[in-house]
Length: 329
Image 1 (tube, rainbow, N blue to C red):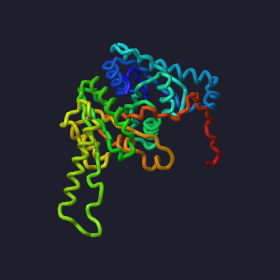
Image 2: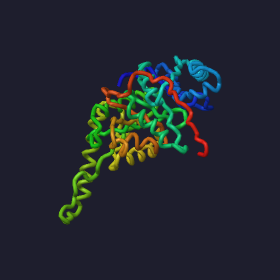
Image 3: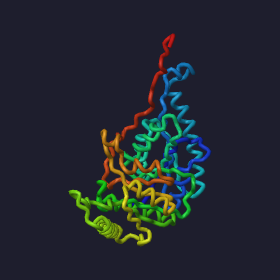
Image 4: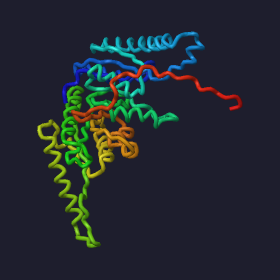
């Protein structure tokens, strides 16, 4: 993975008392010698009727809202600058939010997007999380989803790899995961671990109702040995000692959650492949299914030549009219 030199921060609520995405991106940028761009997408609809009621044109209403948010974001950027990090801010009318963030990251040539996980305590929580999932799925650059307010203090970074490709993750993606994890670990002066989940019984030990004493244990022992050797080949040349290699005979979701709890992980680095259609909507992928349950931040990496399908042109403001309420309804 190339060095992280430009970080785009998706600021969800510029007026929030605490914005952990900005704080953590600033910490990363200072450690990496990177630049930061704070970005907010004005994605809420502009109501034509409201402009008429207030006696202003749509362009005036659009400009007023943009200026209000832009002023706030510039104040935040100035605060970041006082920490010694080069920072700028951008506010744009664009929608939907995940596409707006990706477009802004492209224009900034960002090497990393830092975004806040949408809270799930909401009557439309699944729609809010959908924004996170789509950002994970479609962004061509790594995305750090911030879930905790705690600043990074020599964090444990856990790289989740799949060297056997059992879950359709190519070897090159594992290398990107390890490279990204190593870069973050070194910058934050943390400790790097790796986790690999495998199937303990890849072949049925009992067939046709005939049980052979000890065969299940023998297969499990041999499979574990092979898994350790496979992981060792992938990690060859990395600074991850044996004591920080977690080879777990479980499904990746359970293996990652267990390893996170065991090492008190601060950041999990994992890979994600784009999917489409019903398969994605029903099954999702490991990154999408696991990040909502983890008690730590999640950094999702894509293959090096990943091509995002997000259109490059901004959509501008979303114009709508207020619904007409019929008498007696």
